Every structure is written in structure tokens, then in C-alpha cells.
Length: 214
Ligand SMILES: CC(C)(COP(=O)(O)OP(=O)(O)OC[C@H]1O[C@@H](n2cnc3c(N)ncnc32)[C@H](O)[C@@H]1OP(=O)(O)O)[C@@H](O)C(=O)NCCC(=O)NCCS
Ligand SMILES: [Zn+2]
Image (cartoon, rainbow, N blue to C red):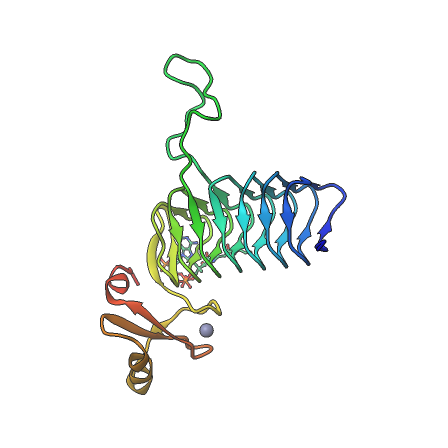
């Protein structure tokens, strides 16, 4: 069945790419062959989607972002303006003898951004890592290590400073009855957190929680 999506006349979408219903692709975007973009996504001005890249449903990719081969964005990921993905941990243009490296002369390091995660404006994601579900990356961060589910990280290098609710609010330790309620649903070895805004309860593994610099 044909899917129905919007492509601005200035964008270049390969006929060998797959784009889901309701996705909007704005000015000066390029979507390469073999890319698979889900439904309801927004590719803002000047986005580049490399060959074979997979993007889930309802993903927002803001202005000027390149999503390179080796990067995968799951459903609901938010990429803030001009954030930077990478795919080669040891980049070189030339070999030791000065000759140009070919496209086969390097190793792709993969990056996975899991469901609902947000990346702040101008953050740089060094490749070979996973950004957990609903994690949040502060603006301008340089992310060099895996980020746990719900993790709030920022800075250069990005450090874990807390945990965030799917609604975006910072989670706090559940106290009293709330702790009992959250704890009842959570196995041992976890810390019960609660959202002060929407009351969602989230259990974070004790070891992960201990690593946060709150
Ligand atoms: C990280 C963020 C989510 C806020 O987290 P927070 O824990 O509520 O942060 P606070 O505002 O309470 O600040 C806490 C400290 O962290 C610092 N901080 C906040 N954001 C930071 C960032 N991105 N990088 C470095 N330090 C940061 C603050 O300066 C403050 O430091 P201080 O205690 O020494 O004064 C937010 O600052 C951010 O970067 N959001 C992303 C915005 C964005 O890029 N949106 C894109 C769409 S437009
Ligand atoms: Zn919440």
C-alpha cells in the first residue's frame, strides 16, 4: 500500500527510501537510499538521513542534523537543533602513507537512541553507545558513555545528574506512602522514584542510581 507523507519540493528523498504515513520532510533535507523512516516523523530544515538508517515512528529531528549510517533512532526520539551524531571512533582521512582512505577502510561504531529519549541542542554523541529509554541529554553536552533509561546527563563529558519522567520532569525519591506504593511494584535492589508533576512511579536499579551526581 502507498504511504502518504509530505516532502517539501526542495528536499531530496531517494526512491529507494521508505517513509511512513504522516511524516513531514521539510526544506533542503536529504534522505538516502535504503533509509527507513517511520510514521508521523518531522524532519526539519536541512536534515540528512544516511543510507540504510532506521528511524522509528513520531521522531522529531530538528534543524541541521545528520543521522549517519550506524545510528538508529527508536520511536518518539527528540533530536534538538544541530545535535551531532558520529560513526567512526578513530577517524582518519588518509592512511599512514598519505593515500586517501576508501569507504571500506574504517569501522562503523553503532549508536542506538532508545524510545522517548531526548537530545539537547548542539549535543555531540560519540559513537558506540546506547542512550536509554526516556533519557535526557542537556544542551551542548558531549556524550561519551551509555546513558541509562530515564537518565539525565549533561556537560563535557556528560555525567549522570539524575533521572527524568517520560513527561520531562525530574524524578525525586518517593517518600512515605509513595515509597511503599512504588516499592511494592518494584523488586529488591531498586530505588523508587516519583514524578512531582504527574505522579508516575519509576524504579531505577540501585547501582545505576548510586552513579548519579545529583
Ligand atoms: C539539562 C537540563 C534538562 C536541565 O537540567 P536541570 O537538572 O533541571 O538543570 P538546572 O537548570 O537545575 O541546573 C543545574 C545545574 O546544571 C547546570 N546545567 C544545566 N544544563 C546544563 C547543560 N546543558 N550543560 C551543562 N550544565 C548545565 C546549571 O548551570 C546548574 O549548575 P549550577 O548548579 O552550577 O548553577 C537543561 O538545562 C537542558 O540542557 N535542556 C535541553 C534544552 C534543549 O537543548 N532543548 C532543545 C529543544 S529547543
Ligand atoms: Zn511526570
